[in-house]
Length: 72
Image 1 (cartoon, rainbow, N blue to C red):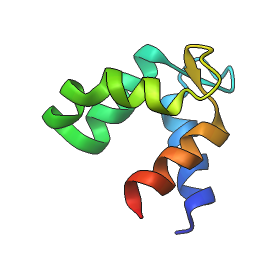
Image 2: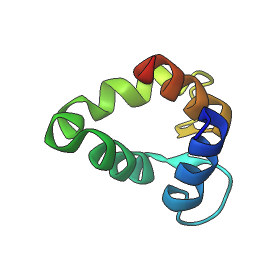
Image 3: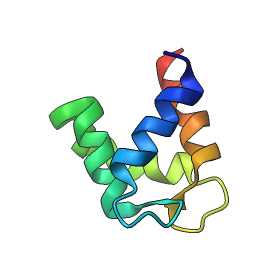
Image 4: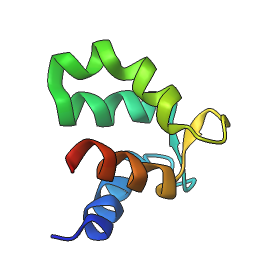
């Protein structure tokens, strides 16, 4: 599966209100799913790092950058 397909799938699952962005609470669930307990402790710093435009949500583009940065 390519990164774009993975991001699309993650967005479909974790953008619960389907507003086109991952809110802080949705992000917590995403990180918990990906990283388990370690992720919850790191969640705030990860969110701040990848919320590049500081709008308190993660866009699909920001999630793509996060996946690339964390996975590669």
